[in-house]
Image 1 (tube, rainbow, N blue to C red):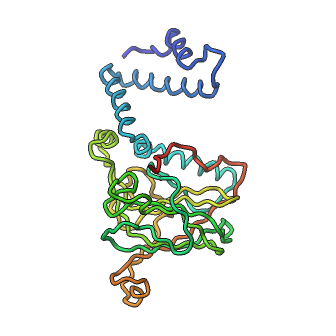
Image 2: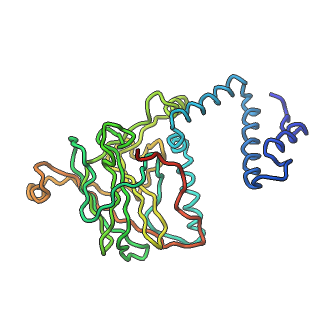
Image 3: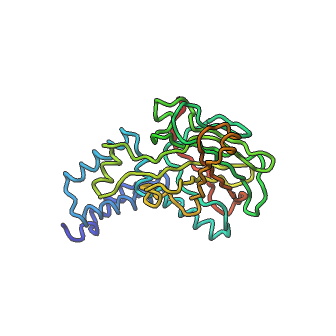
Length: 309
């Protein structure tokens, strides 16, 4: 290790040139960010005496992440998504926004333009053996008033942990819907109880997590976007109680307030009324969303998503 190399004039001049600080054009904020990131990386190389072979191994790894389209997965696994959520939580707290349903990560598997439906909506359109799930609740504001005609965008995995569009064995938009709430802000859907899943075996996310002694598993969960005109968009998910990874989610998405009670209904009359001949699961969960305000950052996140092709 070479002591104080980063404090020498040649390196300082190099940093200015790398970040474009010696040039009049460009984005000033981006220049500062590049300078900070490069400085931190150079310090890491110095502090850990990173060899050229190790450096180029890291470059190859990032190339593999791009080729495998696992950037979103890795961002979740390294805690970036959760950290961004915690930052917005703190910004809202400072601005006086209290209460409401907690946010948690979106993940990389949302698809735009799922069918919009009203009333009791059925998500499972593919034949699959699994326990029927009925989930219902109400969208309200933080004062407890119902939010009529809100959109509850819901998506989740099947019993094998696969998501439609990414799992080509499923039909388009299987287990994906946008539900418009009724005049009282209520929603209801029927689906199948999802399964947890792990990152792709042998992929770059799995490789890194294994190298640092971590697993890549997620508990069973259901994703939601909840939105309405005049309200802050909510990105959240619920976790299914009883899953072995409930409090050991590799993506750090579990929040205690997002673990609703799960009821297994074995009553013959209830099964008959539901049109079933076997027990089913029920979950009741209400969403509380904040009214829009200009004093905190927007909750609509602009990011690339897979296309519904």
